[in-house]
Image 1 (spheres, rainbow, N blue to C red):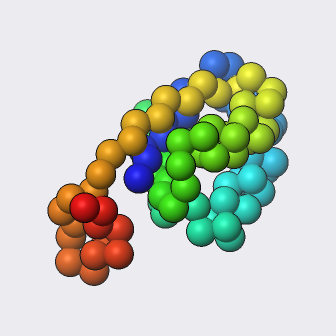
Image 2 (cartoon, rainbow, N blue to C red):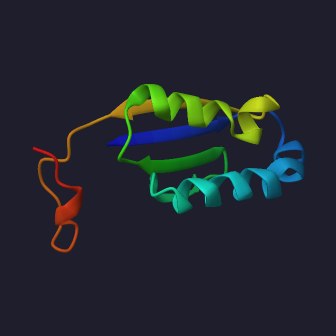
Length: 96
């Protein structure tokens, strides 16, 4: 499983201009079953994504196709972890 943090490299006006394309890309990742949760950081300096069901190379490939990446809007940090314990109801996310 992966936690991905996006940090904006541009002002919010530029990010907002690309946001509809970014959100369409996010929707495709959910449709593929890769994204489990996503949303804005507080304060609004970027976003956070929880992803699973793929390896790091495939995640990196997908992140590179995000319009935010293609247009230099955001930088990405990826942390991989093994979910050894999960809350009730999230058992399918446990790994190991």
